[in-house]
Length: 379
Image 1 (cartoon, one colour):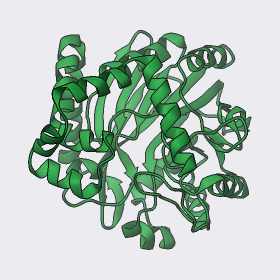
Image 2 (cartoon, rainbow, N blue to C red):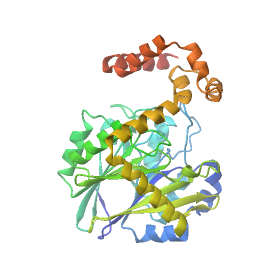
Image 3 (tube, rainbow, N blue to C red):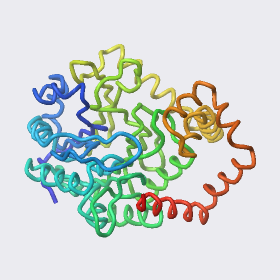
């Protein structure tokens, strides 16, 4: 357990990773604007998702997608400005293998930063962080979806969300605390709404005892839903992840201020630029929040959620189908250029039906993932 100062405000950051373009800013300790630094200092507990290991290792694992990391000095800087803890349950924490995870835990401890969501094995990764904030006993718990990232009974990694276990864990932890904050690292990147399954899962978290559930990982600001006695934020957006000048949604995020005394939640828009992270100016903030609440109103229509998800998935077919069949990035790019025509030529309707059945049926899905996991280990 970690003792926080006897007040009542939590400041929640989203995904944080020192990208190459932000390396000079991290080295100088000049990531955040003065206004954000003031809010960090005035908060009673500051937490974010560390979207990478903190390690000197230069040996990444073999995986699909990029391997990310931060340097040990980055944690020292984040501790110095006022961060208290980090969630480590994400798809990048194991990018530099067991060494990277173990280095991260040591570097967090050296800088007196608490952590949750990853550990030296599955049991350690599943433990919540429990803090006392004023008169409130608060638990922070985080989960990640399965990629190249998970802890096992014998090896380090992230805490996996397992519906056969995790809802029971949420119930048990809530019985021990006054307030439960759950961070869920999952869903689909760049989609501003919950999929039907993600919404169902997050609502079940609330039913199981969570007070606030925040979805991270999507790299865009999503929507918010009040459900029963809790709140679900479907997409917090980036907090510190560099700048992409051709992707405005990448450069936007929300800081979430949780007042435990009043129960109020504040969503504070932030923007990334080449100079670092700052609060959005007044007009931009109004526009961001207007769009945020406008999108959120659509969640009341269950039929719309299903239609939107179906449309989104169809638009992604030229990107997703080549990945499913193991095609190279060059084939992928050509296929997108030709609006999925290459995949339609190579794979018949019947072959797509076979693949659908293998992925949709739980038994077949388990066989396929087991076999592919063994094949990758043998290679």
